[in-house]
Length: 395
Image (tube, one colour):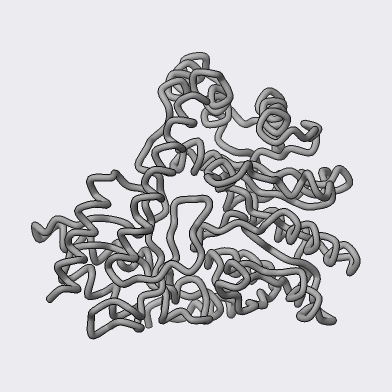
């Protein structure tokens, strides 16, 4: 008998579902190899790459030979720079000691769950949510409790839902603002009420803020300005356009720094040294001007794609105010698969050459009704995709 057949996998894998966006990307790649032109509006990755000052800084760091391990919490200069960013961008004072540099936001979320999620603990999050969030909880033998959330709640968890659904095993909440897949933020007053409800129950709150730099309709409000006991996650991937560099950070309560350091030492050792030294250039005036211009371009795309989708028969019940996603109700389009997001996304890929993501990736609640549209691509691609879908739905 083959040895591989006798090796049992951990039971927790039964709780980890396939990621449909990656499956669709694989199908798209096969079509491209066969000569089809495909417009990709599935994966949430900026079409912009690292800014030139960051590239120069990475090259200089490698030539200086700063490629060895760093401390588990990150190089002091970068932790100070991130603390300075909070002062500039949010007007809040975050001591550099509380900043922990991580191997991407995924590494940050894994660390947060390792430190905070007890075996059997329940963590509340909205349905829909980024699918990996519930898997991070499951990886440490906790359980994500998905709370159905619709347009009335901006597809976010509310304080009332926290209060109603908090049970004996509940230990905290894991939220994202702005959210993937919906691009919607938790309004500041509601976020304050959520954090108060969690604090009253002696729970923890983890806030994924990786899209805060891409907030379009109002200045972003970090949860850190409302409660200094919250754990926030951020990243150099989205606003700073450094996806493949795998660099992010946490801000944690002062009392938890040592615990996070101990776990980081054992799980990751450190984040990429080159990426850390390169990221120092993100906060220079030259780089920030580039990011501001790119944010304005994302804003322009948002304002173009929402009415374009509505003209095709999609309904956008909550206008996204951040990130680069639209969560669109597909029940109104003129197609036999309308109201079946999985079938519809297959039809849009196979028949129109456009990659979009069905709602089932993000939870069970109304999953068949919604698709996620990523506008992290050029205006030319957006216009081409809308033209192709218009022809598909007119057939």
